[in-house]
Structure formats: C-alpha cells, structure tokens
Length: 283
Image (cartoon, rainbow, N blue to C red; front, side):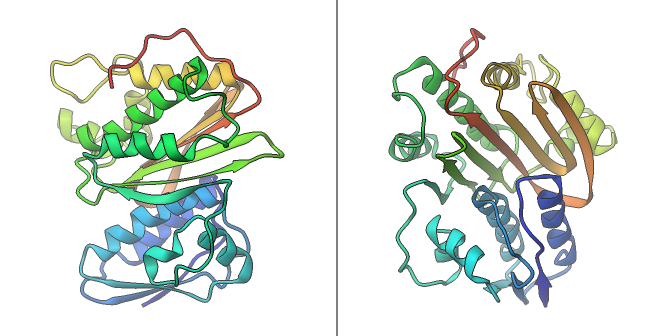
C-alpha cells in the first residue's frame, strides 16, 4: 500500500491529514506501507511527533513502513530533527541547534523526559532554567507527559519534537501519545457516547477528570493561564476532536477521521517572560 501525505503544518489541516493517513491504513495488518512525501513542500518540524505516533500505531500491527519520495526541503527538516533516522535513513546529517529532536519515551520515563528538556531547552530562547517562567513551563510539559501514562495507557510510548524560531522568538513543542484518546476516555469512564468535541469540551473544564475520587483539571487550568499570560498558543488534537486556544479566541473543530493519538502542542513567545500565579502542579 502507498499513501501520499500533503503539507504537514501545525494546524487543523495538518492534523486532519494525519487522521486521513490513519484511516487509509486502518485495515492494514502484516503488510507494507509506503508513505510518500512527494506532494509535501513544507512541514513544520514539531509535526514529526504526531506523525511518529500515527506511524508507530500502524507499525504495531506487524506492518513494515517506509518513507519514500522525500523532496529536498522536507528531507532537510526531518533529517535535522532526527525523525528520518527512526525510519531507516542514514544517520549522517547533524541535528539542528534550533531543534528539539524527535524522541520516543516510554510513558513511565518521566525523569528521562525532564533530563531531555534540561539538555535541549537551554539556548531555545527561554530564560534560565531556574527562572519562574521556565520552571512553570517545565511543570506544564511534565503534566502533559504524565497524562500519557495516567489517562492514555500508551503502550507505544510518548513522542516529542519541537522547534525554536529565533527570528520569530517562538518555541513550539509537541507531545504525542498513541494510547486511549481523550474522547474515548471520557466516554469509557462514564459509559456514555458523546461526540468527540463534546467530550473534549468536558475534559477542558476546570475540575473535570476521568480519575476516580481524585480532583482534576489543575494542569489544564495552569496551561490556559500560562498561555494567556504569555500570549502564546496551545492545541489539543485527540480522536476526532481539535481544540486551539490563544489569548484572543478558542476554536473547536472535528477531523474527517479518527486520529489514533492525543497531541498537545504548546507555542510560547520567548520574548514575553510573563507567567501566572496559578497553583503549582504536583508532578
């Protein structure tokens, strides 16, 4: 089987394209999948994380995956953040100094994840790692990572990738898992059948949680407050639901197909080192 991907931008259309990729290969087991990038002229580097989550979901069904027909510009991007090395390409191109490289963790490797951030976030436009702004940013990322273990039951792990844009003074980081999606988890927990967007809306309300007998929602409140203060942006793509939020507006949309992953993407303005006084997280 051969499937062609369009441009992979950090947007609804980019995630929708990944939902279509997953749907096209949903019946493939013990086969071969060639993912053609011939039609791809641009790719946002952080999109390697959700792409990796989707492809590893397909590969987990005993399929062999090859990435083929890669044009020069996407080739350079996906070599410099290390993504193509995980799909058989030679380990020859040096990693970019502005990249947060594509990396896969076990869902239980929270300490390794923090070590990874300590290694790769300095020089990405943030203040000192001990500053209030950066410590709160690390707390948020840690909470997102922990959710992959406590809510998603992600046996395939957690996929991380990001990019610093010095001229725009912006850092974008995606954390993806291929476990139980947020709409699935909400519906399972309460034995209901809400549409994906309604389930995601519920999960975003402060205090709502699928954990039993445990208060929840603090992490998402902290994330919202942080993004508002920083005037950044956050996206969640999970199942068939997409949410995008920034200081001026929020948006919910539904994908054409089910994305077999939960992806949280945080974009921060590295020139705006404001942070909220929300409660700290117990990570």
